[in-house]
Length: 261
Image (tube, rainbow, N blue to C red; front, top):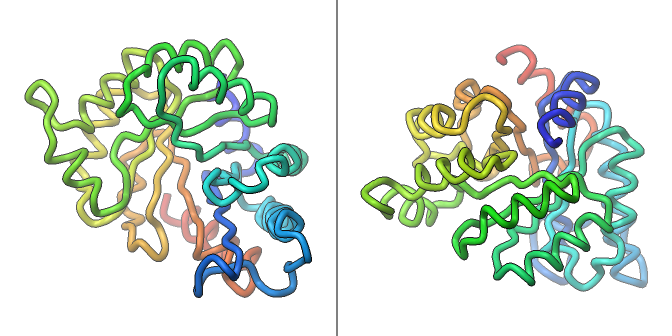
Protein backbone atom coordinates (compact mmCIF):
# COMPACT_ATOMS: atom_id res chain seq x y z
CA UNK A 1 0.00 0.00 0.00
CA UNK A 2 0.99 3.62 -0.51
CA UNK A 3 1.62 4.33 3.18
CA UNK A 4 4.26 1.59 3.34
CA UNK A 5 5.86 2.92 0.15
CA UNK A 6 5.93 6.38 1.72
CA UNK A 7 7.63 5.10 4.87
CA UNK A 8 10.22 3.21 2.86
CA UNK A 9 11.00 6.14 0.57
CA UNK A 10 11.26 8.72 3.36
CA UNK A 11 13.54 6.44 5.36
CA UNK A 12 15.82 5.51 2.47
CA UNK A 13 16.08 9.07 1.18
CA UNK A 14 16.13 10.62 4.67
CA UNK A 15 13.73 13.21 3.29
CA UNK A 16 10.05 14.12 3.19
CA UNK A 17 10.41 16.46 0.21
CA UNK A 18 8.26 16.09 -2.91
CA UNK A 19 9.04 17.94 -6.12
CA UNK A 20 6.17 19.36 -8.17
CA UNK A 21 7.13 18.87 -11.79
CA UNK A 22 5.28 21.64 -13.69
CA UNK A 23 7.30 22.33 -16.86
CA UNK A 24 6.01 25.26 -18.93
CA UNK A 25 7.24 25.89 -22.46
CA UNK A 26 8.54 29.43 -23.17
CA UNK A 27 5.64 30.01 -25.59
CA UNK A 28 3.13 29.29 -22.81
CA UNK A 29 4.04 32.19 -20.51
CA UNK A 30 6.72 34.77 -19.78
CA UNK A 31 8.17 33.67 -16.44
CA UNK A 32 9.02 30.33 -14.85
CA UNK A 33 9.60 28.47 -18.09
CA UNK A 34 11.92 25.72 -19.29
CA UNK A 35 15.42 27.19 -19.87
CA UNK A 36 16.77 27.48 -23.40
CA UNK A 37 19.35 24.72 -22.93
CA UNK A 38 16.55 22.13 -22.89
CA UNK A 39 14.70 23.44 -25.93
CA UNK A 40 14.39 21.04 -28.87
CA UNK A 41 12.54 21.16 -32.17
CA UNK A 42 9.76 18.96 -30.76
CA UNK A 43 7.89 20.11 -27.66
CA UNK A 44 7.73 16.54 -26.39
CA UNK A 45 11.54 16.33 -26.41
CA UNK A 46 11.80 19.65 -24.59
CA UNK A 47 9.42 18.52 -21.87
CA UNK A 48 11.12 15.16 -21.53
CA UNK A 49 14.66 16.54 -21.47
CA UNK A 50 13.81 19.03 -18.76
CA UNK A 51 11.79 16.58 -16.68
CA UNK A 52 14.40 13.83 -16.70
CA UNK A 53 17.19 16.21 -15.77
CA UNK A 54 15.24 17.74 -12.87
CA UNK A 55 14.40 14.26 -11.55
CA UNK A 56 18.08 13.30 -11.61
CA UNK A 57 19.22 16.54 -10.00
CA UNK A 58 16.81 16.37 -7.04
CA UNK A 59 16.98 12.63 -6.43
CA UNK A 60 19.51 12.71 -3.57
CA UNK A 61 17.33 14.99 -1.46
CA UNK A 62 13.73 14.02 -2.28
CA UNK A 63 11.51 11.01 -1.77
CA UNK A 64 8.90 11.70 -4.46
CA UNK A 65 8.21 13.62 -7.66
CA UNK A 66 4.76 14.77 -8.76
CA UNK A 67 4.30 15.58 -12.48
CA UNK A 68 1.23 17.71 -13.16
CA UNK A 69 -0.90 16.34 -16.00
CA UNK A 70 -1.89 19.86 -17.12
CA UNK A 71 1.67 20.54 -18.30
CA UNK A 72 1.86 17.37 -20.38
CA UNK A 73 -1.57 17.30 -22.01
CA UNK A 74 -0.25 17.47 -25.54
CA UNK A 75 2.33 14.76 -24.89
CA UNK A 76 1.00 12.38 -22.25
CA UNK A 77 2.95 9.51 -23.84
CA UNK A 78 6.14 10.76 -22.17
CA UNK A 79 4.67 10.40 -18.67
CA UNK A 80 5.50 6.68 -18.71
CA UNK A 81 9.16 7.52 -19.31
CA UNK A 82 9.04 10.11 -16.54
CA UNK A 83 7.52 7.67 -14.03
CA UNK A 84 10.19 5.12 -14.99
CA UNK A 85 12.97 7.64 -14.36
CA UNK A 86 11.48 8.59 -10.98
CA UNK A 87 11.53 4.94 -9.94
CA UNK A 88 15.07 4.45 -11.26
CA UNK A 89 16.10 7.23 -8.88
CA UNK A 90 14.29 5.33 -6.08
CA UNK A 91 11.55 7.88 -5.50
CA UNK A 92 7.76 7.67 -5.49
CA UNK A 93 5.91 8.75 -8.64
CA UNK A 94 2.71 10.69 -7.96
CA UNK A 95 0.53 11.94 -10.81
CA UNK A 96 -1.03 15.31 -10.03
CA UNK A 97 -4.19 14.62 -12.02
CA UNK A 98 -6.96 15.86 -9.71
CA UNK A 99 -9.24 13.14 -11.02
CA UNK A 100 -12.95 13.96 -10.68
CA UNK A 101 -15.62 12.33 -12.81
CA UNK A 102 -18.27 9.63 -13.02
CA UNK A 103 -17.34 6.02 -12.30
CA UNK A 104 -16.59 4.73 -15.83
CA UNK A 105 -14.41 7.77 -16.61
CA UNK A 106 -12.52 7.37 -13.35
CA UNK A 107 -11.99 3.69 -14.10
CA UNK A 108 -10.45 4.59 -17.45
CA UNK A 109 -8.10 7.07 -15.77
CA UNK A 110 -7.04 4.46 -13.21
CA UNK A 111 -6.18 2.05 -15.99
CA UNK A 112 -3.87 4.56 -17.66
CA UNK A 113 -2.33 5.84 -14.41
CA UNK A 114 -1.38 2.28 -13.54
CA UNK A 115 -0.23 1.60 -17.11
CA UNK A 116 2.10 4.62 -16.94
CA UNK A 117 3.63 3.27 -13.74
CA UNK A 118 2.61 5.78 -11.08
CA UNK A 119 2.31 4.92 -7.39
CA UNK A 120 -0.48 7.36 -6.57
CA UNK A 121 -2.55 10.24 -7.93
CA UNK A 122 -4.43 13.27 -6.65
CA UNK A 123 -8.20 13.14 -6.56
CA UNK A 124 -10.89 15.83 -6.31
CA UNK A 125 -13.92 14.75 -4.22
CA UNK A 126 -16.32 17.38 -5.59
CA UNK A 127 -18.02 15.06 -8.08
CA UNK A 128 -18.44 12.29 -5.52
CA UNK A 129 -17.44 8.70 -6.33
CA UNK A 130 -14.76 8.81 -3.63
CA UNK A 131 -15.48 5.38 -2.18
CA UNK A 132 -15.55 3.55 -5.52
CA UNK A 133 -12.47 5.36 -6.78
CA UNK A 134 -10.47 4.42 -3.68
CA UNK A 135 -11.63 0.81 -3.88
CA UNK A 136 -10.78 0.50 -7.58
CA UNK A 137 -7.44 2.29 -7.11
CA UNK A 138 -6.43 -0.03 -4.29
CA UNK A 139 -7.20 -3.03 -6.48
CA UNK A 140 -4.56 -1.62 -8.82
CA UNK A 141 -2.18 -0.84 -5.92
CA UNK A 142 -2.55 2.89 -6.52
CA UNK A 143 -2.64 5.44 -3.71
CA UNK A 144 -5.35 8.11 -3.65
CA UNK A 145 -4.46 11.56 -2.32
CA UNK A 146 -7.57 13.69 -1.87
CA UNK A 147 -7.81 17.47 -2.24
CA UNK A 148 -8.77 18.39 1.32
CA UNK A 149 -7.70 21.99 1.94
CA UNK A 150 -5.83 23.45 -1.00
CA UNK A 151 -3.31 26.31 -0.95
CA UNK A 152 -4.84 28.71 -3.51
CA UNK A 153 -6.74 31.70 -2.05
CA UNK A 154 -10.06 30.66 -3.61
CA UNK A 155 -9.96 27.45 -1.58
CA UNK A 156 -10.82 29.40 1.57
CA UNK A 157 -14.28 30.17 0.19
CA UNK A 158 -14.90 26.68 -1.19
CA UNK A 159 -13.31 24.53 1.50
CA UNK A 160 -13.42 26.52 4.74
CA UNK A 161 -16.39 28.85 4.49
CA UNK A 162 -18.64 26.40 2.62
CA UNK A 163 -20.44 23.97 4.92
CA UNK A 164 -21.76 20.44 4.42
CA UNK A 165 -24.18 19.18 7.07
CA UNK A 166 -23.13 22.01 9.33
CA UNK A 167 -19.36 21.52 9.15
CA UNK A 168 -16.66 23.06 6.92
CA UNK A 169 -16.15 21.25 3.64
CA UNK A 170 -12.53 20.43 4.47
CA UNK A 171 -13.64 18.51 7.56
CA UNK A 172 -16.34 16.75 5.56
CA UNK A 173 -13.61 15.69 3.13
CA UNK A 174 -11.33 14.56 5.96
CA UNK A 175 -14.11 12.27 7.15
CA UNK A 176 -14.36 10.78 3.66
CA UNK A 177 -10.62 10.13 3.70
CA UNK A 178 -10.98 8.25 6.97
CA UNK A 179 -14.21 6.43 6.10
CA UNK A 180 -13.10 5.20 2.69
CA UNK A 181 -9.46 4.56 3.66
CA UNK A 182 -7.88 6.95 1.20
CA UNK A 183 -4.11 7.30 1.37
CA UNK A 184 -3.50 11.01 1.66
CA UNK A 185 -4.73 14.59 1.89
CA UNK A 186 -3.59 17.60 -0.13
CA UNK A 187 -3.27 20.46 2.33
CA UNK A 188 -1.97 24.00 1.84
CA UNK A 189 0.46 25.82 4.09
CA UNK A 190 -0.55 29.28 2.88
CA UNK A 191 -1.91 32.20 4.89
CA UNK A 192 -5.59 31.38 5.31
CA UNK A 193 -4.82 27.79 6.37
CA UNK A 194 -4.59 27.96 10.15
CA UNK A 195 -2.72 25.59 12.42
CA UNK A 196 -6.04 24.41 13.85
CA UNK A 197 -7.26 23.45 10.38
CA UNK A 198 -4.32 21.07 9.91
CA UNK A 199 -4.60 19.74 13.46
CA UNK A 200 -8.29 18.99 13.05
CA UNK A 201 -7.72 17.18 9.74
CA UNK A 202 -4.96 15.14 11.34
CA UNK A 203 -7.26 14.24 14.23
CA UNK A 204 -10.00 13.04 11.87
CA UNK A 205 -7.90 10.97 9.43
CA UNK A 206 -5.58 9.18 11.84
CA UNK A 207 -1.86 8.47 11.76
CA UNK A 208 -1.52 6.36 8.58
CA UNK A 209 -2.50 9.09 6.11
CA UNK A 210 0.11 11.09 4.17
CA UNK A 211 -0.23 14.89 4.14
CA UNK A 212 0.87 16.28 0.77
CA UNK A 213 1.66 19.83 1.85
CA UNK A 214 1.59 22.58 -0.77
CA UNK A 215 2.48 26.26 -0.99
CA UNK A 216 6.11 26.58 0.13
CA UNK A 217 7.97 29.03 -2.10
CA UNK A 218 6.31 31.62 -4.38
CA UNK A 219 2.88 31.06 -2.78
CA UNK A 220 4.26 32.14 0.60
CA UNK A 221 3.44 29.00 2.55
CA UNK A 222 4.51 28.87 6.20
CA UNK A 223 6.98 26.06 6.86
CA UNK A 224 6.29 26.00 10.61
CA UNK A 225 2.89 24.43 9.88
CA UNK A 226 4.64 21.23 8.76
CA UNK A 227 5.00 20.17 12.40
CA UNK A 228 1.26 19.48 12.67
CA UNK A 229 1.45 16.61 10.14
CA UNK A 230 2.44 13.15 11.35
CA UNK A 231 3.35 11.94 7.83
CA UNK A 232 4.41 15.05 5.87
CA UNK A 233 5.26 15.10 2.19
CA UNK A 234 6.32 18.70 1.60
CA UNK A 235 6.07 19.92 -1.97
CA UNK A 236 8.54 22.27 -3.60
CA UNK A 237 7.93 23.40 -7.15
CA UNK A 238 8.86 26.57 -9.00
CA UNK A 239 11.40 27.60 -6.35
CA UNK A 240 13.43 24.49 -7.21
CA UNK A 241 12.80 23.46 -10.81
CA UNK A 242 13.29 26.97 -12.24
CA UNK A 243 16.21 27.93 -10.03
CA UNK A 244 19.71 28.36 -11.49
CA UNK A 245 20.84 25.22 -9.68
CA UNK A 246 17.95 22.89 -8.75
CA UNK A 247 20.23 20.43 -6.97
CA UNK A 248 21.74 23.05 -4.67
CA UNK A 249 18.35 24.68 -4.08
CA UNK A 250 16.66 21.48 -2.97
CA UNK A 251 19.73 20.57 -0.93
CA UNK A 252 19.35 23.87 0.95
CA UNK A 253 15.67 23.17 1.66
CA UNK A 254 16.55 19.65 2.78
CA UNK A 255 19.11 21.02 5.24
CA UNK A 256 16.60 23.55 6.62
CA UNK A 257 13.85 20.95 7.05
CA UNK A 258 16.22 18.49 8.73
CA UNK A 259 17.33 21.15 11.21
CA UNK A 260 13.79 22.22 12.13
CA UNK A 261 11.71 19.07 11.79
